[in-house]
Picture 1 (spheres, rainbow, N blue to C red):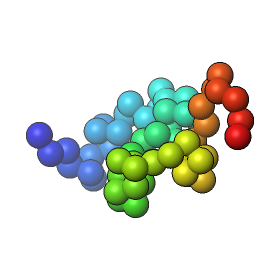
Picture 2: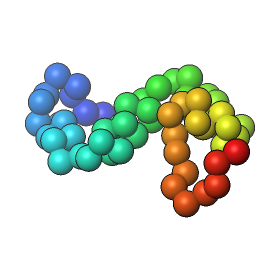
Picture 3: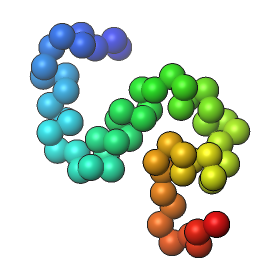
Length: 58
């Protein structure tokens, strides 16, 4: 089902997102990120501002 992007009610869920959730909403809509994702290394992910808590840094 396609959402009407002009209807503000379709975006009410954004109000409840934390910073990481909002960042993900923006990132997942980025065509360059989606194209790069299949071959994304951890180092490349850091260039996109992604972090992997609990892993050692390079």
